[in-house]
Amino acid sequence: MADIVEEMRDSLEEQIDELRKEMSRISRSIAEGAEDAIEEAADLYEQGRGRMRRTARGVGDQIHFAADVARENPVTTATVLSTVALLGLAAGLMLGGMFAGGSRR
Image (cartoon, rainbow, N blue to C red; front, top):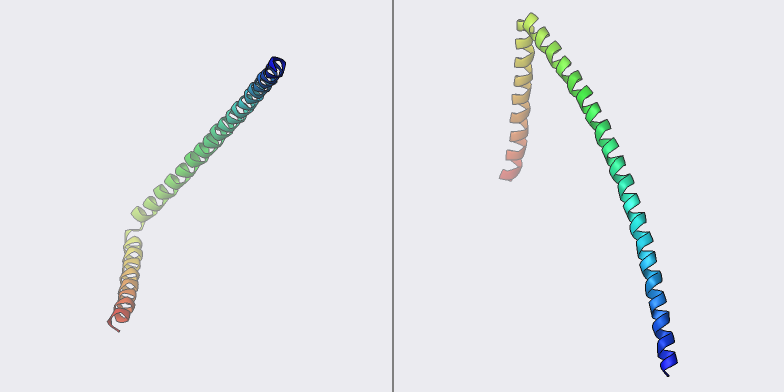
């Protein structure tokens, strides 16, 4: 009977050792995957950051160009802005009338 208990104990200890080794392998694999994911995320961040800088520069250039054109042609700029404002006002009044008309019914 003592032999059976000793064999079971040895078998369980071997299984525990195998499980520990397997857990160690899994941990290493997860750590390697996490390192790869972190490196990839850092690369994507750097790429996005560079693109954002180029985009911001391009938008800034366009804003400066538009400001220069507006300074050179103040009458045209005032006409365009007034027209856009009137169109926005008209659209707002039309939409307001549509929604207000629907709520009275």
